[in-house]
Length: 168
Image (tube, rainbow, N blue to C red; front, side):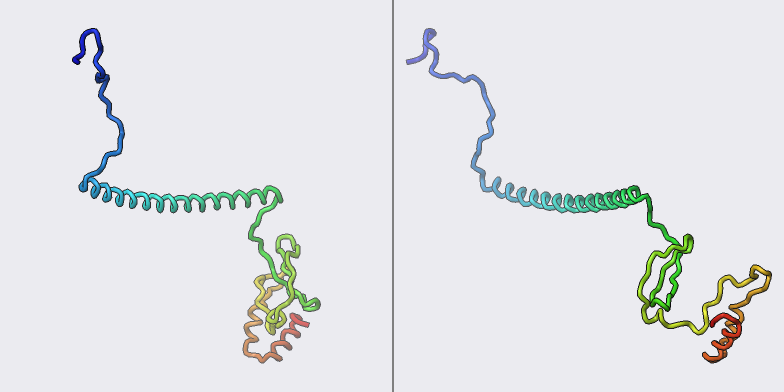
């Protein structure tokens, strides 16, 4: 029976909608989606590698900053810092040790046992870097005298040095 004015129709369109609903793909759409999937996978792999490298670089920067922080904290806590200080190693033959002495304060900063090469005494001492005038005005030329002894034998050198009062 057809609807009348007195009776409403059994159904009527209220509005038209577009809803996301799964639809079967055609073979051509399926192939295209497969290619898109492979390409997107490559993009993800590349981004992961880039992020991994960036994170490693950021981690290295963070570690460097933490190391500087620890270094500064140690300096502040101890009220000291590490600096290059001129020192000399002095052989103590009686004790069989080598003392490392700061030249600015004269403090011993290290003592170690003599090694074999430390025990070997020099026949001819190294030239004195302070060659020149002594306090009383006498011209000191130790290095020149030592060079002139180069032709002597070991015993001759020792005798010359003993005569000069440089060894006892």
